[in-house]
Length: 173
Ligand code: IMP
Ligand code: MG
Image: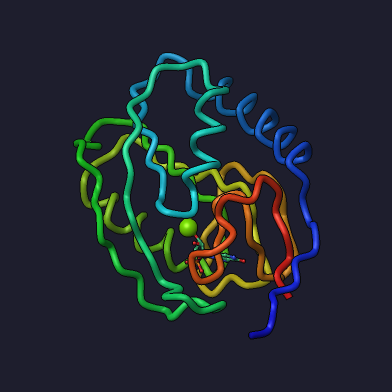
């Protein structure tokens, strides 16, 4: 069996600094608002857990589980929802947390779904943005780091369910 080759791309120290930057912006924008944070599983679990511990405003956190990769390195183009949020977003400010924005299919799917439920606002915060890969013009309001079109793993991101637990982010060759 061939072994995967991993090259360090973003260290855990860099991730920590990026989270501080994002938290600073979010703390300024979301004071005294009715906020629902929606974390997209599975990939965003570490990003969300670390980021929310740096936030100093009141919010409810909820989760959706969406997938489109189905163990491949490219999106299949069909987004499947296997777990929906459990709260009502009507009249609330929704902040979506996603670890990586790639083709835009996942967020496009979620934005359309949420728009039907009358939120006051919906914004997107991503840790990584692979701009070159966009197939749908989705724009993230808060972006941690822009990266090249490379397949990455670690810090929640997987390849065939492997490597989610790595503390740093690696390029998988
Ligand atoms: P999009 O729908 O193509 O924007 O992709 C969003 C989802 O695809 C992300 O939430 C990840 O779960 C997955 N994904 C995109 N790029 C990568 C990558 O480089 N490594 C691992 N998963 C990725
Ligand atoms: Mg994801």
